Image (cartoon, rainbow, N blue to C red; front, side):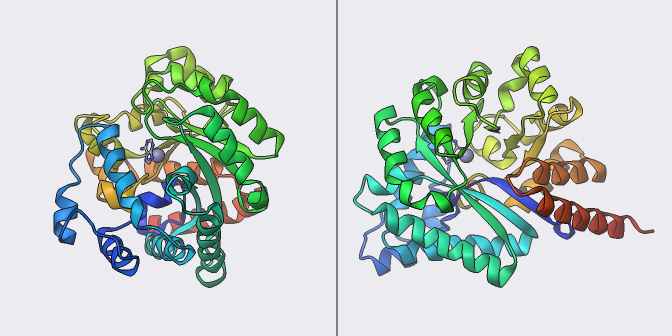
Length: 334
Ligand SMILES: Nc1ncnc2[nH]cnc12
Ligand SMILES: [Zn+2]
């Protein structure tokens, strides 16, 4: 059934879709030596103990991305996965600082990603948006410089986000940058409550004006916060396989997604960094359905939430919700 439902993906780092096969192809194209000798060896290295142990490997992997064509190929490969998983709308993150800090131009990154997304809409019928993420382990000044650097391309960017090492880098550090981004007409989202406590979610809402919380799984530690998130229907973009691989939960069976759904939180299912965590969005739906014994109605609710939580126009949303309802009814037929 999961495959049959048209859906939106809202928490996806494009650099996190770099499969080892493409990593080798790009390394050869750009004359870069990799520390591993085979695709299998790379996959074997993907054993993480926490968020930081993943980020170290993830930033190193992104080193093979050099030209606009590389970013195009990366994004196009992801869009083909979207087509397979019936993802009809996607809002993708990119981390410009990971690239500009090693001498790659902002222009090369954004034009490659944007061209692929434009082709995705024209050739595959997949609508999309781009969200620029600041790396929170770097300074607020560096984030402000990056926002300034991005200005010529704001017509292609719907909003800004905040990612990378959460602990010790609270949202408040980036208040001025997010205020400025909002002045420029950009939407705001932020990773919060992945590894760090519920306070960081309050910080993302109160200091950054976050309209959507990425992860947010630790919100249940604060019942007042849960009430606020429910009342204001602030979406949470949850990534089950990521939470398992980064040891946010011990086992997928311990995940609180069902509990959050039961409380009326606007929870969605997403893949985060699928090439590193062993699954694209449908794999995430399938795994969490099995682990928590979710019903078909739960899955339908989660997929509906993906459109309600997205930044699409009301007209597009209505069309997608209609398509989704028809697909679900078709599946329900005796
Ligand atoms: N799950 C995650 N949390 C924080 N930063 C990230 N960058 C890529 N994936 C991330
Ligand atoms: Zn993420």
